[in-house]
Amino acid sequence: MFLMIIGKIKKNEKKIKFQLDLFCTNCGKSVPGGMQASENYYDSDSFKIEIDNFKKNYLCGLCRDAKRIKDKI
Ligand SMILES: [Zn+2]
Image 1 (spheres, rainbow, N blue to C red):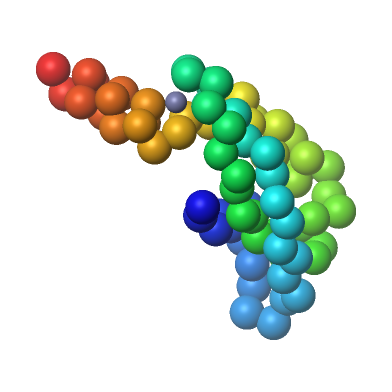
Image 2 (spheres, protein in one colour):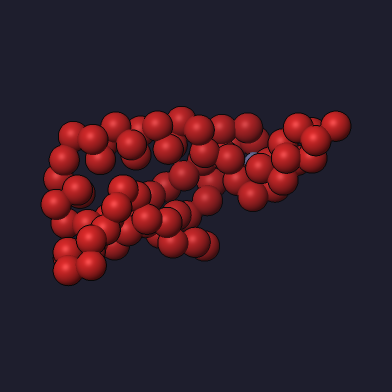
């Protein structure tokens, strides 16, 4: 479980917390993701695009570590 901020949240902006069902793009493992975004950003089109890209590139912790090790060699 983690909490990720999508986009930028200004100091006085209202925050929205939401859940994303994330699936690792490598092993297919499902990871519940706690996310946070500012209220203004949450309604915007760029937010939807960013979430889409985030999901498309998402790797679970294990696969991310494995990739990091592979990149080093
Ligand atoms: Zn994985």
